[in-house]
Image (tube, rainbow, N blue to C red):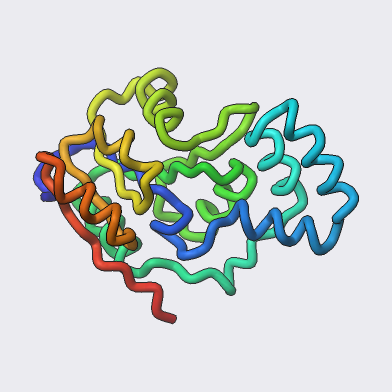
Length: 186
């Protein structure tokens, strides 16, 4: 497991933390600035999801102390780093939010999120990793069906906090698998 030197990419929402930061920012915006949110939603119809994520994330301060971090994922990341592997945080949440987690944890080489009208989810993550970062072989730690296309480009499916239907799908693949049993305890 640890004797290779492939770069590890780690998903944020549901993998590293239990919450979804975009949802938290959206509901905060709904509560604090409902009229602005309404105008964002109208423009979203023309500009897309990445635009909406940027607008709701712009003034949002992530409540770090209230988040439920996956201690098992953090432990795995530290073990990987102790084997001199590079670890990146990559998320569909906006870069403004991802930066706050990156700065708090101080365990990632760099972090990447949705920005510049590029929604960092699913195949867009693969495109970014291969085209922008020029990384051809990598491992990926994730937790959702949106991660399935990414795992198709890895040698091993590394997962945590998954649904029973996703477990069935993962078990039907021929790829190596490694489960990290989630631990969101305080």
